[in-house]
Each structure stands twice: as structure tokens, then as C-alpha cells.
Length: 108
Image 1 (cartoon, rainbow, N blue to C red):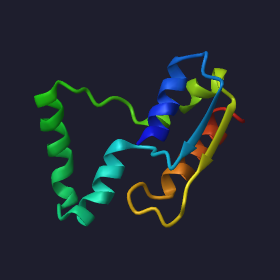
Image 2 (image 1 turned 180 degrees about the vertical axis):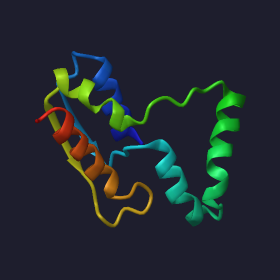
Image 3 (image 1 turned 90 degrees about the vertical axis):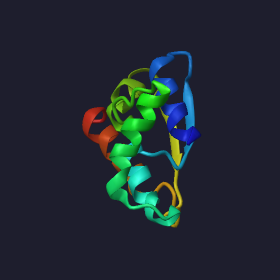
Image 4 (image 1 turned 90 degrees about the horizontal axis):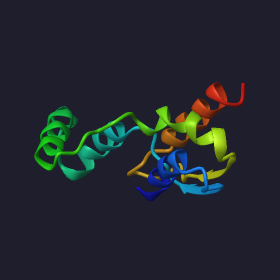
């Protein structure tokens, strides 16, 4: 999950001038619910599990990464994303969503 972590760090740190993102995800909840069946869990329980896990560890799940993309592109225009369409953990549509967000919020 380092690709998205790098994008989020770059959104907060203007000294980061470029990011190579290999299979970034657009939304944490989506990744967990999409991957749950392959781990033997029902996606129905994911939101409750994330809530209680966050409370027990005092983690606050913030905005999904796609919400910070515009902030990132304000000062870090160099970005390369690669993503295999056969990726079963972080599905390809996440990179497409991030690209579309950049296109809508920044490039227009």
C-alpha cells in the first residue's frame, strides 16, 4: 500500500517533487470490501470491522486518497502510475479513478 501512502505524503510535503505509484488505491474501504471474499470474509462486515478496529487502535480513517489528489498536484506535478489490470488486491479501477479525479479537478 506504499503507492497511495507516497501520494498522500507528497500532498503534504512540497519538497517531494515526483512520485512513482505502483498500484495506488483510490479508497481504503473499497479495497478492503473488494478483497474480503478472497480472504473468506463477507464484505457486509467490513465497515463495522473498520470502525471497531479504528476505535480500538485510536485510528481515524480520513478522507479517501482520491480527495487529496488535487492538493498533491498543486505542487508535485511529476507523477507516474502503473497498475496491472490483473491485480486482485488493488483492482485496476482505482488507478482509473485517481486519474479521472486528476483530470477533473486539476487538468481542466
